[in-house]
Image (cartoon, rainbow, N blue to C red; front, side, top):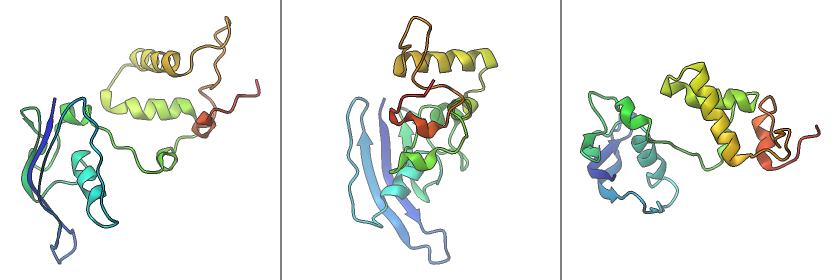
Length: 156
């Protein structure tokens, strides 16, 4: 599925209404890697905030496939659940005291039952932190800090 931006304009939120982005058109295709480059202040973050549903464009349109991104100032949940935004310093977006709470928070928008949440967490753990012994011991325990994910082995 592709994301298409057509004639996007984003204005500063202050009274100046100066253009932060003007007449931006681009097509982002599924399976391709797109590199977004520019000088400090050129609008990279502003564009990504718009794609992540955090800031509406003042003009232009964005579509995912044939579905419009912005409807009445909001992005439909069906689109938001397909999008994500990762900051330049990912450790700055971790805030929960445990890996379990980070997982739970990230699953909130999906409105899963407790059992479904636990299945998602178990599947992620099996993929990214497979058991290191027959007793199903893992390197990362869900009650540890998410900052422990750096690869450091737990003490037991």
